[in-house]
Image 1 (cartoon, rainbow, N blue to C red):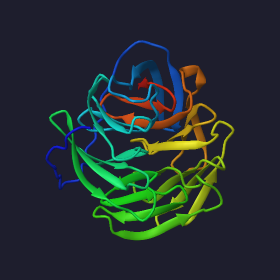
Image 2 (image 1 turned 90 degrees about the vertical axis):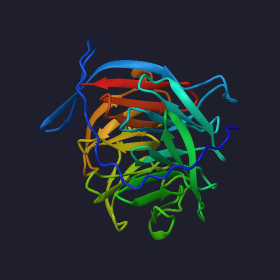
Image 3 (image 1 turned 30 degrees about the vertical axis):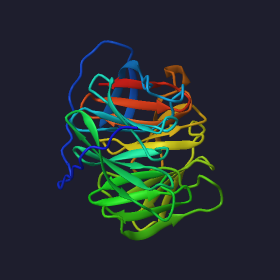
Image 4 (image 1 turned 30 degrees about the horizontal axis):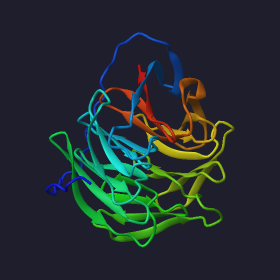
Length: 300
């Protein structure tokens, strides 16, 4: 067990994320993001998540987040660890979590929050290329996923979506569906903050909600079976993992139309459970369950 270091607090919310232009040779796939933008995947690479200190031989990468510094934070559910990757996707540090981590989100440019199921939320800072334990939030329900947007925390429990403040005060239960075990699985917030996207893994749906919890649209597609993790890209579209379909697809901002299939089993996907856009390197990162690799796709 790693010894806890001193706590670091960051007051300002980071709002500056920069796109860098990358040039390299490789296979090109055209992805229609919107009528004015075309995104291409030029190269696919694979990097290992597992380290010698892991207890489990197989990693479960349930959450990924890229920080403005270029560091990538990864939750490894199987080994109950939070792992920090450098700019070349090599593990530079790790911390043991009090429970199995389910996902991670950015709070500031150097602080993240980790959803730990019934243990609550663990805040962590990145300082001098190391992970530092911060404060904790105890919740009256499970934390399956956590998303931060302009001082608001959106937390799913598997059955419901909640709005909290950064200090842990409940603002409102926004949405609930108790018909099955993972009807409110993961969530993401639009860039403008007017929409909340929720995956219903049990019924293979992507839901789009208003900020008051009103259902705006429901999306289904044969290439989206068991949707899990999702992220909003800098252009406003939504990347969603199809866990059972071995896919990552792009959906428009309204949550109504599929724009493209980003990756499938042909690109090496197997039970994809996390997706992230790395704005520092202009890459899409996909993590998987029962797999020790990250799939990294460079974009143009």
